Image (tube, rainbow, N blue to C red):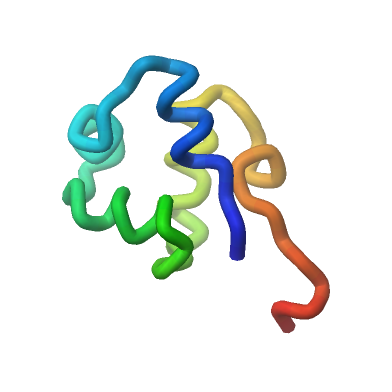
Length: 67
């Protein structure tokens, strides 16, 4: 699943470490999320969207062929 985490994080001038601290995860988790190597739990997805003040759909890009 693609996402806009890196883009949204940079718009808000947050480092990966800053975002990790806000979400209660490790910086490595943020690196994996931004690289598309890890899909978050629904709880983490909600936390991420909340930090950015947007919806899950605005952060994560679901593509039909991923089923």
